[in-house]
Length: 489
Image (cartoon, rainbow, N blue to C red):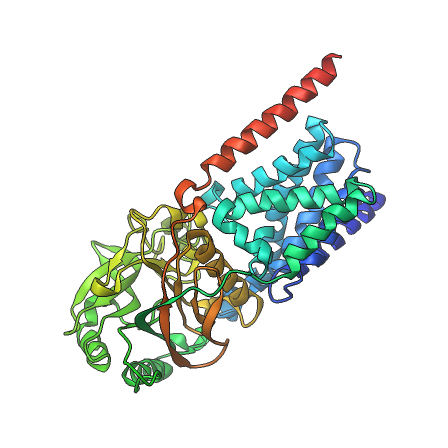
């Protein structure tokens, strides 16, 4: 048993090294080399069980380091939730490891050679994005968003790019020199070069993005509420940062005000007055028919609510608890809400019509993680609004990785993203994923940024994940057929 545990230290260490590809480290070449080394050593796992354990340990090390920030939400109210923090890290790393263990086990079971790992690994990452409401955070494709390779997202989407990355990872230890050099040269090039396309042209529309910087442990403090609200009002009413024109709309982050919408009308009128009547999009909690929603609203010139969008992809154990009313009897709630089962889900993706500014697809916080949800918009929007409260995610890795996700959605759709984050990182992102202007973590302020024009619809925005799912099914069936043929010989 001790020898077996020692054998798992190697893949766990390589997984931890591979995590250096993700923010805040941003070293995708290290990720590539570490995972390629893991594939090489995985050949020593001769049985399905050994392969599963190897893959699980690799995933455990990778997700433990990449998602270490997951402790942050539990430390906001440490007296109440702090005891859960270490369990959260271990469980999420172990859960991610299960997926990778299944990929390595399936590849070994197929006995179709090392290349079987490519579709198995890609398929399990695709499954991770959908099953149990999905959690595609920290996919290898996320690590290359800053590079030329990341531009492939417009064609392949995140899961197709995963497939290409896994093909490179598996190929590196298999090919001999000089064939290995011939593979490494283009791979290294696309992982080192920045995007080559020119910056997107700018529209005449100017958006003001507001960042109040309300730390989560102070956000609902009665003594601090007025400070953060007044700060946002002042930013909204401030003289235009650009010399030539005032903003055409103002965007506040998720849950930007602490009052429930049903009690907030005087506040909304005050906000609209500060904005001089231009549209304001802001996050608010609301109650209707006994259900609670995490929402974005658009305000008209007199503070009237013109449109409402309710978040539909909620965070399990954060915004709602499975069997929440039952769990509430024992004092167990989600981290964000304090009422039974928590928030209710909205009906699905919808657009906000901002008149001459165009139509925006609203994403609230966690919703920016799901490429397929963005693809599910009823019609193509002109831009994306991402309103988030990343104060939950800590002060380093979590917010930076969440920003990378928003940049991925921009590339995949060929659309600009206007991102307003409570504690940062607020940013204007162009359709190639470039950050045109931003406010750093832990800063209060606002930016007036011209909205980039959208690009033509991308291939991925037209097709979604279905073609990749069909391709993976064909590859896996081919591997299975080869295994049966080999066994019958």
